[in-house]
Length: 229
Ligand SMILES: O=C(O)CCC(=O)C(=O)O
Image (cartoon, rainbow, N blue to C red):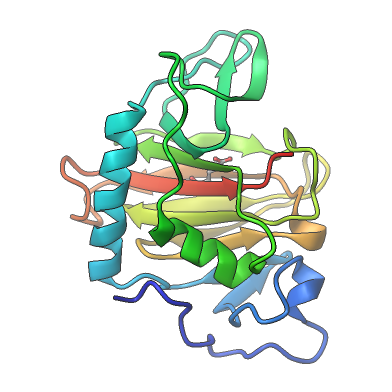
């Protein structure tokens, strides 16, 4: 079903680059490309595997409905969100944080095995992620450049899975500002920010509405997997 690790990209691991240099498991599959230490596996999930994962995510969303968080400045985010796992990521005027419960008071549903399989292929068997953030980008939604730094342990990578419309992913630097590079993420791609790239600034400038028919009603889902504590 394409849920297993893909064949290595054009460029196998070797020379200067070793998976552990990027904060990944020693037997992680070779990515299609790396940019600023960010690893990208194009087309990890086949179309049937994407559909199967989407069915799993529908169950997550049924148990923990999507909501639109506010930034700490009181502005509604354009992305809708929910989470699976021990923790869910949450934001309001009190700031960004992880919460044990969905805003309606129930525990977050478990992370689907289809998603955990990818994590373990890239990050190894030792630990499961605590949080699988589910971001839904409908037309016009985007996410500004930011660092993922609400976690206690940066030795684990952040893993992202893309489903649905194409999205322009911008990669910045460890510090704010400076030159950035962008790459298009397409449905079924997997990306990892680990090791020296764990705290790199990143964001989504825009999506390409209508570029995929995977989601009913169009749009893009991004899953972000993180170890929290
Ligand atoms: O949508 C994406 O690909 C990135 C999401 C992201 O940066 C985040 O959830 O922190």
